[in-house]
Image (cartoon, rainbow, N blue to C red; front, side, top):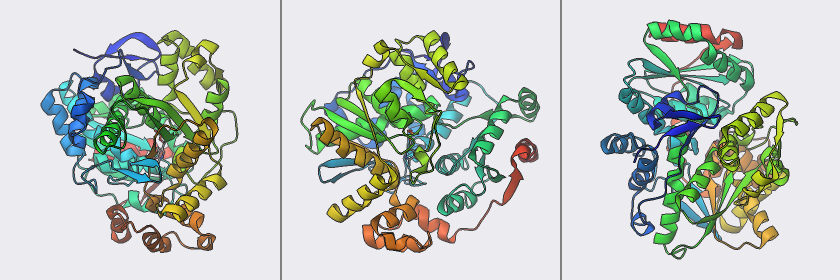
Length: 496
Ligand SMILES: *Cc1c(COP(=O)(O)O)cnc(C)c1O
C-alpha cells in the first residue's frame, strides 16, 4: 500500500514520501503529514530480537513506501554504522528506576545525529527517484548543535554540498571547534557577524529569492533544507521509541503489552512528536511528558490551551531548547483539529501575526495523552548533582530538564508506570554547565580543562568526537556580515 503525504495547511495537496523529503516544507508553508498513520505490521515478539538497523527498516518502510527495500536498507546501513560508538546505536541505561534512552552515541554526541546521519542518504535517494539532476545545496543556520550534525551527515555525500552559518560569538567553544574543523570536500562553514536570528533570516531570504534560485539552477544547483520539519528527520526518530520498547521487553524489564511513559526534553517538538507517532503506530506508550526549560511556552500551552510566544527569551544552560516557536507542534495541532487544514492555517497565521493563538475546548480534550512540566536553571543543576551523587550517572543539562520533570510528574500524579527519559546529549558537549552543577568550585575554570575532570567524575571515557577536536586542524575561517550571505553562497557554489 502506498502512503502519501499532505500539507497541514492544504489537504488537497498530495505528494510521495520522496517528494516530501526533497521539498522539506510544503509550498503553502505547511508541514507534510502522512495521510494515514501506519500501524506497526511486525509483532513486538519479532521486534524484540532485532538490531537497531532491522528495527529502522521495519518502522521506516511503513512511512517511506515509495522507497524500494534495497534503497531503504542501503540508507540505513550508511547511517547507522561505526560512526556510532556502540553497536546498540541507542542504548538504554537504567539508573535507579528510570530508563535513559541515550541518543547521543553518534558523530556529534547529540541526538540530532539520530536523524541527520540518515537524512543525506534519504535525500540523495529521493533526488535519484525523482530524476533531479542538480546538485543539492543544503543551507543551514545554526545556534550550535544542528550545524555540526548536518555537516557530519552530509560530509562527502555525493551529489550534495553543505554551507553552515553560525553566529561568530554565539556558540560554545566546543561547538565552534566542532564546526570549523569539519572535514569533507563539499562542506563550508561561515561565521556571521551577528546573532542566530540574523543568520536564520539570511538563510530564509536566500531560500525565498527566486531569481537567485534560477541563477544557481543554471550552474546545476538547487537548495534544500535539513531542518527539523523535514519528514526525513521525523520518521527516523520514530524508530528509537519502537526499539526502546522492544529492548525493555527483551530484557524483561516490562511485561507484554505493559504501558510505559516517555519524558522528552523539548524545543522544536520534533523528538516528542516522534514518540507520539510511535504511540499511534501501536507502541504501548501511555503518557508523553513534554519537558521545557525556563522558555516554557509549551508548558503554558498544555496548561492553558493558549500558545503565546510574546514573552522574554531566556538564555539557559540547555540552549538547544531555547526556542519560542516550536515548529513541529503544527503537526499535532493539525491532528487535534481533526485534520482540518483550514483551521490549522488560521491558527498558524495568528501565530505569525500576533504571536499567539488559542485552541478550542474540543481540541484541548484531545491532548489527554500529553503531560507537561518545566525545570528552572537551579532545578536543572540540582538534578545533575543529585543523580550524580546518588548513582554516579552524569547527565547533560537537556537530559536533566527531562529527568527533573519526570520526578515532578511522578510525585504530582502518582502515575507509577515505568519511565523512559530521552537523553539527548553527552555531558561532554555541555561540560562547563555540567561540572559547575556538580561542584561550584569549577565556576572559574576553562571549558577545556574540565574535560578531564568530567572523565574522572563520570568514569565515561572521553568520546572520540571530543578528542578529535582537541588536535584537529582549523579548516574553515570564512567570516562575513549578515547582509553578505548571498554573495558568499554565490561565490562558493559557482566556484566549485
Ligand atoms: C534539538 C535538541 C533538543 C530538542 O529537541 P526537539 O526535537 O527540537 O524538541 C533537546 N536536546 C538536545 C541536546 C538537542 O540538540
